[in-house]
Amino acid sequence: MTDKMLHFMAGAFISVVVGYLTRMPILGFLVACVIGLIKEFWDIEHGTAEFLDFVSTALGAFLVLLILKYLGGL
Image 1 (cartoon, rainbow, N blue to C red):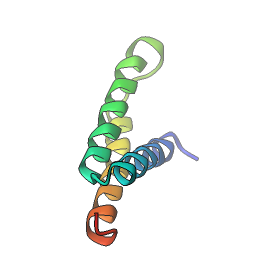
Image 2 (image 1 turned 180 degrees about the horizontal axis):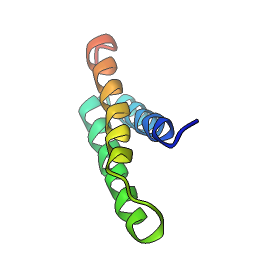
Image 3 (image 1 turned 90 degrees about the vertical axis):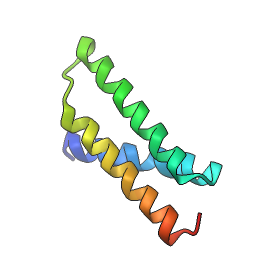
């Protein structure tokens, strides 16, 4: 799997867990984005920070937001 796919799946996972448990899909999306942003800031000092990693995380979270909101009835 590529790095971007892993970021996408991580964003989706965080979003579905937080969004479903709190019954607030937007909160799941926001938490996933904040965690993705924190991870990229951490990568500035300890790895390779890439904007597209953050975008991939946010897109995964956004997909879950749409699914929970419009198909899941939350």
